[in-house]
Each structure stands twice: as C-alpha cells, then as structure tokens.
Image (cartoon, rainbow, N blue to C red):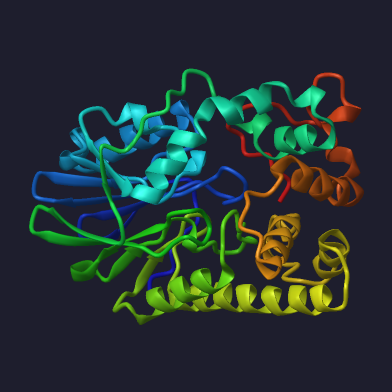
Length: 344
C-alpha cells in the first residue's frame, strides 16, 4: 500500500476514487469519499458543517469532471459529521440504510445545535460538548436533509461501469452503519466502523456486531481502507481496531463481574488503555455502552449523564481546556473556527 500523507484535503486513492481527509480525525473531523467512472459520481458522506462541505465539494469539482454534479450521495450513518452538509449536494439521490434514515429523523441537527448554543447552562456536560465540538465548527444554516432512498442490509449501485456494494453492518457505532465497497478498485469506505489512531465511540453496539463488522472488512479483497476518522489505511489498522474492541470488552467485563460501576471501571481502564490513540475520554462512553449491554438494557443511554462523567476525567487531565474558566468560552489561544486546534 502507498504511504498516504495524512493532510487536509482530497487524495486520489485509486482510478477515479478519492478520499477527503480532515486531520486530526478527532471529534467532528471526519473523512468522506468520491467514486467516479465516466460521467457518473457517488459521494460517500458530507461533513460537519456547511463551510467544510462547500470546500470539499469545490475540491472535488476541481479534481474530477464527474463531480460537477454529484449523482448519488451515500450516508454511511446518522452522525452529524457525516450528514450535516447533505443540503449542499443538490439534485443527488441520497442513499442510506433505513436505520440511518430513522435515526436522522428522530435526532435532527436542531437538537444537537441547541445543546451547543446553551452549553453554559448545562454544567460539565455542556462544557465538554462545547470544548470537543461546539467551538470548532460553524453550525449556522444547517437543515436536516434526509435520505431519499433506503435499504435494509445490502444494496448494489452502479457508478458508470463500476459496481459499488453497500452493506449495513450495524447496529454497532450507530443504529445503522454502512460500508461502501468498490471491488474493482479494491477499496472500501468504512464510515465510522473504522477509526484509525483514535479511540472509537460506541453509541449503539452491541460490541459483537462491531467486531463482526471488522471481520467482514478483513474478509474483503481490498488493499485500501478509507476510515471515517484518521488516515487512509489498510487491513492492519482494522485488526488494531478489532483488538481494541475485544480488549475493552474483556476489561469492562472483568470489572462488571467484580461489582464496579461503569464510572469506576472507566476511571481504571482509561489510565492505561491505548494511550497513544487520541480521544481517550471516549472510554467512558464505550464502557457505559458495554455495561448497558451486560445488563441487557436496550434503552437509550442518558447521554448528558455520560458526557458529564466523561467531562470530570477530561478536566482533571486537561484543566486548562475547561471553558467555564474563560469568560468568552474559549481556552487560552483557542477560538471558534476551522483551525482544528484540538490539542490532540
């Protein structure tokens, strides 16, 4: 595999295939993809806000004549950093799993944006949302632009003469997680089923499905893996993520069986678990999801409680980043915008 450079922007990864990367791959800094053949084009995901998505679409139009007008947009899952730019892809058929479409409908952008705007009134949970995501993106003008075509488990599309295979491997990261496989080019776009160099986040689970999704990707005849976050990679990085998931499951289970609550278990695990990967605070979200799975609790988690407990550890680790300590809501030398000053 080529030694891909992890830099912001468009990278050609195959004949008529591109990855659009947003380092450092942390909260909200996601990847997207473009597949073209002849005059046909398919976009894999949009980005977290309209300015970022507009920049990406402009870069794609400059690189590929077929991207002048995108024919098909595939949303791999419902998270805003993969869907909030949908409205800018005018005229495209928007394809997603039914589970993704359902989640987009019940969790519109307004719900998240209202929390961002009211962060000062929401204690630690609001402050951590502002620090990790709110201050770094421009959420103005976003409209919930839903899929126009849905499917359950599998769908085959044609992009010119290229066969593109969509497979819903969720629920795992979210309720519906689609991978986009281009067999002729030996490329797979994974959405957030694969994080590279950063802790993944398990909003849905079960963990067995996510491990199975990794196995599905490893069984494909592909050389290039374009993850939802992180650099362009290969199968070794998928194996590393699989190891993360199995090890975290086992570490959480030991503590669950010993009677520790999920917060105490998280505090123990986070001290020495994949410490060279960014976004270590996500251990709290993941352990909470695992504990709920061990309990057989399929009700949605109390997201704000989980974020509040995660925030306590985060402020202890990074006290200078707590926006409650700064009247304007920004840490030292930090401001809202697209400078990606995340400190990772």
